[in-house]
Amino acid sequence: MRVIDLWSEKKKPTVSFELYPARDPAAAEKLDKVIDRLAKLEPDFVSVTFGAGGSTREGSYALVKKLKQEKGLEVVAYFTCWGLGPEQISAVLDDYRELGVETILAARGDPPHDQPGFQPHPESLAHASDLIAFIKPRYDFCIACAGYPEGHVEAASPEKDLEYLKLKVDRGADFVITNYTYDNDLFFAFQKRARALGIEMPILPGVMPIYSVKMMENLARLCGASIPDRVRKDLESLDPADKKAVAAYGIDLACDLCRGLLRGGAPGIHIYTMDRSKAAVQIVTTLRDEGLL
Image: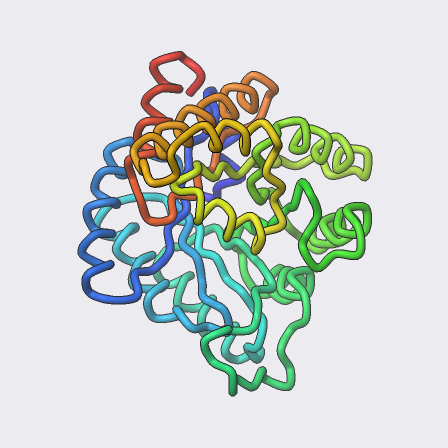
């Protein structure tokens, strides 16, 4: 199913998870267990990331195939175009189409940090909007694009970043999945600004539970997500070495954020799992018990 059709056919908000390919056999074994736990929740779809410069091309394909063919899940396949030429882009998209993938999340991606000598293809596409323009006339994919409530880390301003989002929409994106934020006001303000620009499609909020203080800080720096003072104060009251207490706080915070998002009319929640299942299972179970999902 094309994911955009879910919101016209489904009465309740959607539930979805992000996964990324395992990088070694031990991680793959753990990921298999995570997938089994998440599959039991019957998500509306699962997204699979695609490494910088095509670095996880084979692993991403294998994971998409497993989720679709072995688990029977609807899959959104990320595709990042940075560094890849037109023939490479077409080859990846052809592979996904043959697997029965109907929805692609089109993103620019970043240079691969672990390949210092990597040389991008001379015809590499510079922006996600260019990738969407490449895909639209050649394929029948439903296309998702990324949105940034606080602005992309490389954007000159949040306003300029929103202009780029409008360009992605104008070139054929069907819905938006956002970067996470720990302040719902930022999401709803972003949505309001997007609507004012004529972006009327579903804007699906990303949710990142706090898994550890260190991970929270690292991801916030990389993704450009701010950490509210209240969250810092709450975490300061906990022993950072008490992993269970920090994780429990992260789950409670995520549940509160999701409640606000869903009550505010968000079309669903998209949980960034970091290839873990405990937080996602507890969040979704809690929200379903409360009748919000």
